Length: 95
Image 1 (cartoon, helix red, strand yellow):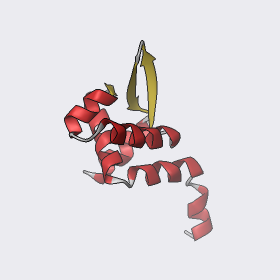
Image 2: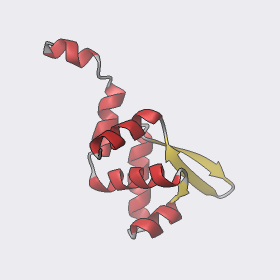
Image 3: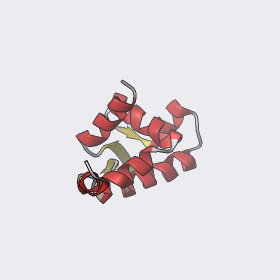
Image 4: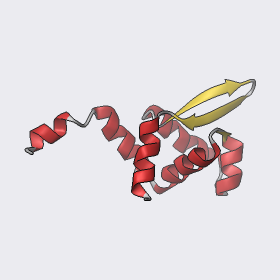
């Protein structure tokens, strides 16, 4: 398979998703969301024992790259994995 044929199968969105997952902390956030389903920033901050501002910063990057999505519930924002492809990639990495 030539390089051009291979590139046709990788979308820019997929490349951005992989870049976002390449950071160790963002990968930990994604893995935690995969286990828990849905979490808010405070829950993630407590579990990962990192500052809330750091969690928020990395969740923003994950949102921008369509790795996670969010839902407002009153004053709280809850995050979850955006699509099955993200979960499949992470599971493949650690299988």
